[in-house]
Length: 148
Image 1 (cartoon, rainbow, N blue to C red):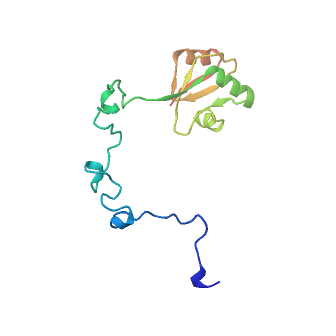
Image 2: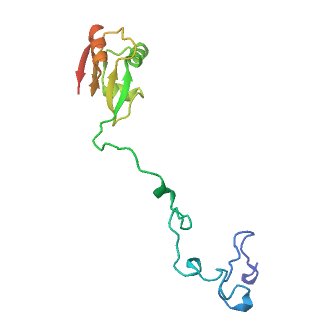
Image 3: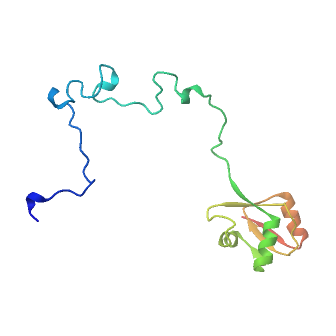
């Protein structure tokens, strides 16, 4: 092997068109850009969503709705889910850490207990919020409700 026989690997080098190198190259003159217009000029770039002068979609479609920046989003957990958790793990106190450990909520979630389902076990529940039905059902089963 000699330096003068070295070649790049097959397919690793693409042949680049040399544009604007005179008429003899076959790509001189307008340099494959056609005649006149914005696209033939240097520095041209098309706006994202440009539709050739037609009114763009993001301006044709009306704006609607409202998103409250102060909305508090809770992770909802039903009594039926709590009952299933108690049956599986025999917990006597359920708090945010226990719910996170068992994959029912994320670390940063605010948790609200809802009253869907039945709670048969006496249990102490600690969460960020409770529905009235859930709090009543937990206390009716002999449990205790603690709001964070």
